[in-house]
Length: 327
Ligand code: SER
Image (cartoon, rainbow, N blue to C red; front, side):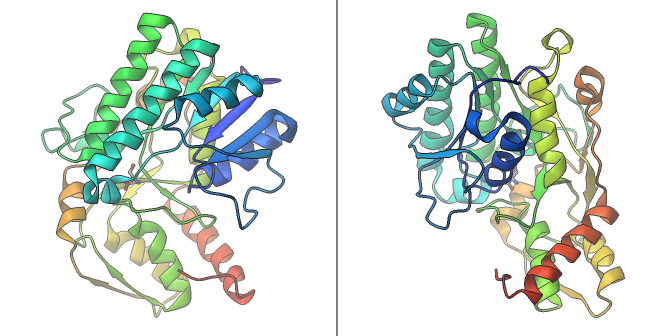
């Protein structure tokens, strides 16, 4: 058992795309009795049932956030409560509040209670001046989106808390995450999830990004593996604590459509550009260099476009047969 073994864990934003699956992985690995899941919403559908104990928590209330950490004797926080890029662009003030104030509270509480802290950054931390091919680990970061501004600021703040207070902060720059469990909420990379649902439901999809827009992506099992592997990694080997580039594949809408077409020959893709999300996507890497993560903590994803597509279509096809699939 690694670093977080036999420790008490809190996940914020547990009802979100990553949180809802990370919760089950953590509970399987460390025991449901050691896991507290939380979200600002009630778990009305019982989505997290069996993964740990659920508490309703608004991360903007430092008092109630701290009370949960204290009462539950939490040692490790996975702080996933945040807004994604497209919704953040629609409501920048709200995005600053949730992404920054929520993180500040998580950091302060980690400082006061000696917790280790995982915080996801994103490809959104890069901007139009960043080298977009083979984007280096350490490079120019001048994002133009509010989401990106909060992600770069968050990376710096997490580094600061480590340097200044010795808090064990860690994080990765996630690419687009593809999954069949919970839908993402308002990101620029969401098309790569929707396309599978629409392929299974309608055999056609209208994409809001241009045909040749290349972005880094990752299948959910690898996203969860990244978080857990990094939190379990030997601290001595980590030079970049809070902002590791991690990727598993990169593709364009045309390339993912072609891969789906290998399984569903009638599948058709059409295009109807959304200028807001296109501008964001154009400022993000075509593909990243994730060698620092590979070298410093052994990052090694399992899924590529071919194996992910086969699995997504299999699972979504079964859900459709069972009447459980809608978008
Ligand atoms: N998937 C995220 C988004 O599109 C990127 O981190 O906002």
